[in-house]
Length: 153
Image (spheres, helix red, strand yellow):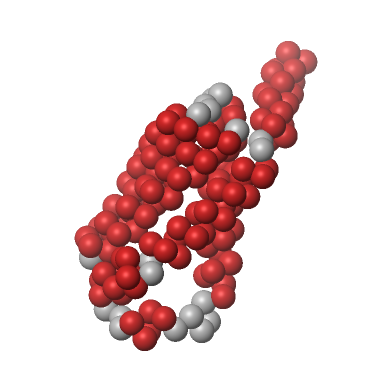
């Protein structure tokens, strides 16, 4: 019983150590970068028009942010949680460096987010164009986050 307890305690201690070893300034930079990137990606001049057309909404509807405060807060929290998770995984796996972070972020995005979007949107009969816009955003977002963490940690 005590051997099992020691294994659990050591396992939990390593996660605590990894969490404590995270560079939280890097996490803040990557989170803010993620948020700004999303704003730029979905801007009308970039992919905003194609995104709105895929949803069947006008520019005026897309620009109307009334009632979307919660969505903006969730977006920021989502970016923070994705960044913290990537930082913990990269610390636990001892992944550092610009290219390693870039590759790891892209792989995580494709495996977990893009595959999920693909089947959720497929069953929901969402436009493939909308799925592509959102999936590409996720790949680039997590690639940026991984690159920043890898380069600055």
